[in-house]
Length: 555
Image 1 (cartoon, rainbow, N blue to C red):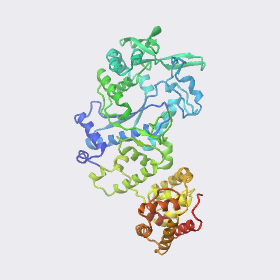
Image 2: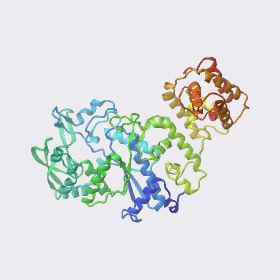
Image 3: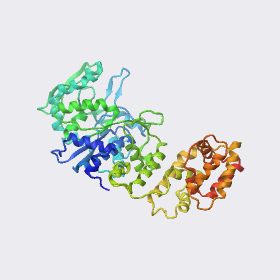
Image 4: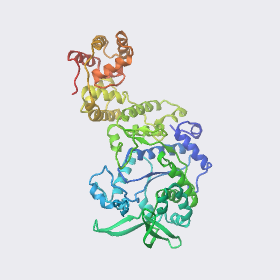
């Protein structure tokens, strides 16, 4: 269902709030370039992780909300800063020794003795692509394509090398002093002496690899800017900021230079005329400085949004080089990509723990929102994450089962194949089949994978205590007397009544006992729905086996 400007103008969902702020910044007018440009950035120095892709997911949500609000044409560029020099070898790649000769190296005193190669000039440790950047760029694009995003990929190497940035590079040289002065107050005393907004990129013979190697000279400063000639005179400096060696003149156009990070961002915003780009909380200062630099060289900084960072299972910031978070492929092995999009949508200004145990909850929440979307009026739909996840076109399919129910079914029956789950699903929902409910079929497969890798290794049953034995005996008798086909709600009511008749001060303790004794875990599904899915006779048999054997055992 389409959301019109009247609905978009009043919607409270954060993408619509961002869209309205952007429209206000543009004064409601289409830019001269004929479209509104959204951008996301990616640094391919390590394997892509979910935080990287969160920018594209969220930016697309704002983009679609903006289109609904204004009707203006838009574009999205996914920009890869693949011309950056390799500072260190990532910890989570194979064949790390292949990268070592291309990474920056320092001596025992901390002096740079080898400069890093641009990532597009660094070999692929996986041995699949022409460079490390190409390998990681490919992974990024594969993920974005899997989401079905409408985007254009742009490589820094191509943008610098093709001359697309040339005009703006000359503007930086013309304003070299003022640009440098913007950044210097943010640096320590020693770093100020050696800071340069522009780095030369040179090609020289390297004995370590026995061939020529491109390298970004990070410890060279500009001693004379010559924009009229398209060159600059550089001189290397040591860590104390003292000049070393002879000055050398070097071309800065067509890939002959690389801007330092903050200046590079401002260069990109100006050259591409970016209207909107969001970024993480750790880049607040860089955004502020980038905006000042952008205005200094004649550009206009984009509107933006600051989101919180993702944390790993230890509460530490996720890092590409450390690989301490979920990889894209890992989430998609256990849940549909729409659940990941929901995780990105929810509370973007709050730090969230991004680890495997987030997957089931995100999946069930997505299913709940999707189930509501079909019957909602436009104003309600604008607040439903499903509208934003599906770019304004929520899928019509609903599922008769939650993901948590499927997970617990897989746990009880020790499923190694989704066909086992379908045997129970078909009995519970005769109208459902893999052909008629493809999303449910995918969920069954995900449930088996998640059970096998996470639930099964952690299952730990306990024997019932004496008071619990009496309650379980009562429960088996009550459920055995219920009619076949009893609803989940009726079953849930009877389970409640049994708990009330026995010595449980808090009914939560009763349900936790059921989970620990019968499912081998401390929490679980709504028991009535689970029993209805599993089948009354089978569940009664499960309870009696736990009583007869003095507790169940992990398979």
